[in-house]
Length: 281
Image (tube, rainbow, N blue to C red; front, side, top):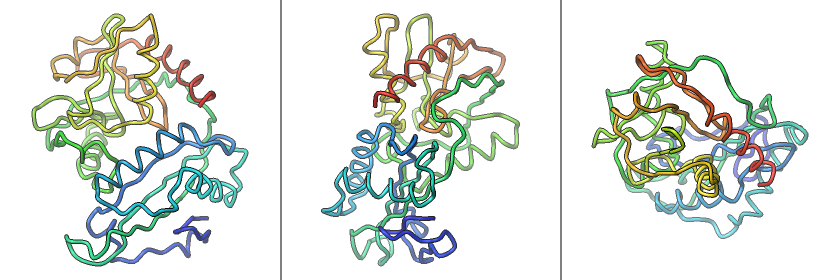
């Protein structure tokens, strides 16, 4: 079942026009949200990021788009799919209503919410071998547009194809200044001793939900020193650990980049703290 602008419909009946601006121009933003037993994880962060993304895209935010209303819309589709007692992955997409070419005929929006069942309620530590490489064919631009989750994910798609063709599990993306910004599907963190470092949003990194949670954890910890600054590709092979974060997996440790192999002690420790945060939040 799909929530199409407030109406619960069967997947086969959930149809959008071929002139939908999300399809035609990538004029759409979305959130990937984890729901556990009917409870939306980190809902406040998702809500404010969605509102910020809509403002950056100069969409008109409907007066009824309160946190309570959108939370209810998500819970309605969870219930309709009988996933109240299961972990679920929700995609909440907002698109500008059709009309116009590059210049929209309206700034009003529509939305669609879909959901799929997940296997595990909380984040599990993945010890499988995980190899990454740099994706250098295309760059992301530093600036606000790169920090939001929009439908225009061409670099991520092409990078994923490159990774698949070359048997890598993931790739890291560079910006126009040749700084490492993020992975294809999440933010990156480097560990050297007790120092944990991640690229700043100003470099074009996605304003990730788990990224924010981990930064809060690191800043409150006496065991780690946190740094938010640009990452050079040369730093990757000097790091003790590299890990990737996103809402779906939590923390994914990297095993190998080129000739360097990494440990995962810090990633394991932070994942335990993240799970505690998820239960509280």
